[in-house]
Image (cartoon, rainbow, N blue to C red):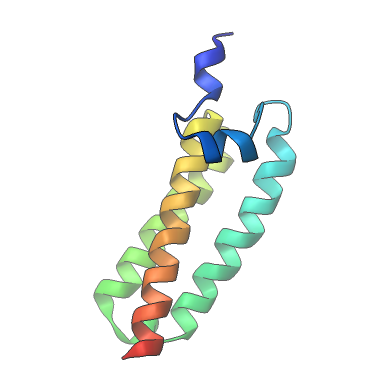
Length: 98
């Protein structure tokens, strides 16, 4: 197995998810809970009233969860989860501040 597959290229993320394939199922269990709950919170704060926000939230959350279900490489799982969390936080912030 190629060692470069485990490295995302960002030192902070690599430090958190060091040897992600060793802790694969533990990391995925935590990401499922965090991505799922934060997506629900984002919908609850006002994402349900906007079709575009609902589309962004559903697409990003389902993409991250699909990567986990498909047992994709951890690089894909981590990046898709971080993207989903970023979109969730942006939608939550937008809805709470407007």
